[in-house]
Image (cartoon, rainbow, N blue to C red; front, side, top):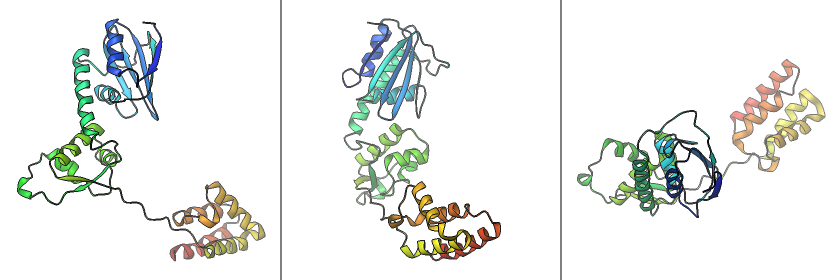
Length: 263
């Protein structure tokens, strides 16, 4: 095997890559990338000693990367980690990781991504429920709106642990998958609002007022005819900063405060 090599995870599993590196007693850094995700795995004399990803380090980072079915990898020899986060036997590590991969395969039948949303199923009697505290903790977060990923983030728990628990609760008949509700349409500001902004700002800055408002709207990445209501206060604050005279600026802000209160 060449000292430096690269490839595609769709062609060779991470577990097989590691076994190849370990069988030859390699030392170096294996870099992996999958979309916006990335991670590193270090081997020293045929043993995995450190792994890190965006969200995890150590065993958990390695296990997450072992579930990646697509992505790129490349290995750079003779690169040592600045820290060591894995101390268990490498064969045991890979065996545990492959077990995790098989579990994920079953879980993905119900939870193909962490965007899946659940709700409580209504047909299970309370006498049939016998849950551990960790399961109750996750179950209480299920509200037909939060996704599996959002529950993981809210509880600061590993995605695998959350997905596994949700899968088990689903399999027990306590949960069912629902379509995530669409957010309500964003409320758009009416033309009357901009007439008031332009008019009040013109009292302080003259005819250039509407140009300043247009420039600020553009900087915010918006348009007058589709300006979101939740950015109205931000716009007022931004254009008021263009008024050098403190008295005029205060009068503008006071008049616009009344307009914002009526929204």
